Structure formats: structure tokens, C-alpha cells
Image 1: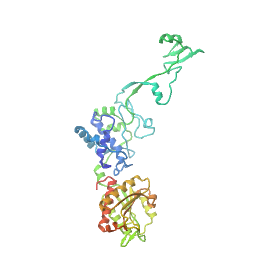
Image 2: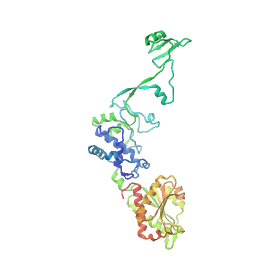
Image 3: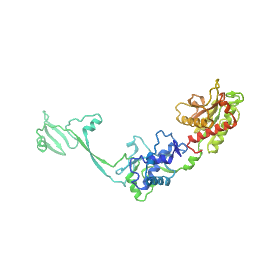
Image 4: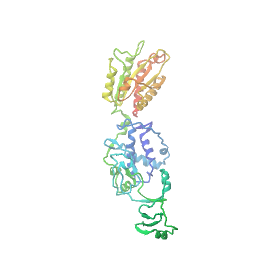
Length: 437
């Protein structure tokens, strides 16, 4: 499996190294649990995994992995290999990694931390971590300034000073000090004050902070205790994550097959609709030859392929769209050849519907592979409001493979090069789904 040209293993491990905790100062089973949960979180970026949701949009930097000393790298490799392909799902959806360093007796429901419900992040009582706490003195003035408030003088301060009674000049007659009623004069005596006309202001508060971390997911301290009790990584994850199950993916199969992928191949024009014509070169025939060869290649790689036409026949645009929307493929590819009155115009261009990011990614790969194979001009990705792109409910592209009227492209039209176009598109599709050709 690959993400943006990087092996999925390196992608996962480099992200595990970014966790704000010393992952090497913990039992091996806890490290394995973190790797499994991080693999689960990142599998949604692997197109051929069956769990793909979106393309990874960040930058991948493996420097932290490359700089790792050999013994630590070997430990990471072993933890990854011993959990090879294992992910955690809830309701058939991969979970994300959440952890807290010490929950102090119990984790939280996601609503309390994230503001919304996550089924697998339910409150769990943790009997295995310490209830360590620390006291922190907070400057009230700074705290108030941080939220745009002012600290005012008060007649009472919570449970320390309350029930203050004053005369008409503001002098204290009596008050409750720490639960005991005293006079204003007694207050002067106790605190050594010059007057009993006194007002109160809190300049600091002391917080008792129990535990450490956001309180969701795996309690690291508790997990370490479980590992020391000979619990394995699955025991740890099942204790802190609710309603989950483990799924084992065949990473080699994901890398080497398009099995489970559905692809519609549309040979443009057909029947009475010849498309573009230049002498003996008829677009509908070239399109069909490319489509049939592409169908053969992708099918042999395990993909479920559907042709909108497999013979020279009329298929309306609306019928082509119906096929696509009925089959709901992962992608569709519509094969065409271009023409222009001026023979100096040559090259390949690919059209996508606006805002279809996946189509743009596929288009770039097709352009790169075809131009590399045929050495023709790359005319780039174009936005097209074509019926088949606009009305279809799947990601798709229109590939204008070449200009059959071009003074360069027309000399390239032959059986061998037609197959080369199909093979180049095939390689591009495999790259798009991150599968080894």
C-alpha cells in the first residue's frame, strides 16, 4: 500500500512517532495497540483498501523515521509486522486514535470533549491508572484578561467570606468567615486591618488537576498496567474502545489487485455517430479499440469492468449516464479523439467536472502516463461541463487521447500505439488506486 508514493507502513510509523508521548518508554503491547489504532485512522486514505474516504491532503515527512536509531526502528518494525494488516472498526468504519496519558479513574464520553457523539468513545471506568493530581495556582487577573473580563471587588468570596452585613457607610457589621460568624471589628483584629470598611478581591485561585490528557480513548498509564498483567494489544483496545471489532487486511493483496473496484469504460460515439474523422481515421473505431484493450487489462488485474458499448452501435449519452448511475462505479473513463481545423494542434487533454478533486488526480496520472508512452504533447487538465460528467454520480474523466487531425498525432495512429494508449491509461488507473502494475 502506498500514500503519495510512500509505503503505507512508513506513513503509519512516521505518524506514530509524532504522538506526544515517549512510545519507547512503554510495554511492547501498548506500542502495538497504538500502531493498530493509527493504522485504522489512516487506512481511509488508501484507495484500494475498501475503506477509502478521501485523499491525504497534508505533507508526508519521513525525517523522524529516517533519523531513528536502529534499535528503536527495529522495535517499531516488529510491532508493525506483528500486527500486520489489523485495523479496528466500529459499524464497519475505521476508528481514529485517541489517547490520554492518565485518565485519573475514568475516560469521558466524546460529547464532553468533542461536542458530538462518537460511538466507540464511551466513558470507561479505569481501575488501572493512578489518580495522580497536581495543584496549580492561577492568577485571576491574567485569566480574566485572557477572556476579556475584569476582576471586581466583591462583598463575598465563595465559601471563604459570605453573608457580609454592612452599615450605611459601608463598614462591616458582621460576616461569615470560613463558616464562622464574626464582627467587622474581629476581622480587623484577626487580619491586622486599619479599618473595618473592607471589600474583597480574588487575585488567584488554586486548581486541583486530576490525570493528564483529553480523557478520550486509551489511557496510556492504564494500558501499561494492563500490559504488565500480560494483556495483549487487543485486550487493551477492547477495554478502552467500545463496540469495536478487529479486521485483518491483506496488505499484499491491496497492493497487487484491483479486486473490489468497479470501473465503467465508455467508448465514445458509435453506430451512425462517427465522431471525428480524418481520412481513414474514424474516431468511434479508435475509441472502441482502446476501450476493449483497457477492459482486458483492468479485468485481468481483478477490477469489475463495464463497457457502455463493446461493438459498433449507437448508445445515447443519456443511456451511457444511466449505465454509470446504475452501476455506481468507483470511476468511469470516457475515451475520445479530438480534432481541430488547424493541423498544427496536437496532443492529449483530459476533461473533469468542476470541483471533482479525485477526477483531477486521475486526470494528471493519465496525462503523465500517455505522454510518457507516446511522447505526445500534454495539453493539460480542462474543466468541462459535458453531459456525461455533469449528470453522472461517480468520479469520471473524458480522455481526448490525441488530435486525429494533427500533423504529428495523425502519424502516430496505428494498432501498436492504440494499444499503448490503453496500457498507459491502465497504468494510470493502477497508480490512482495505489496498486502495483
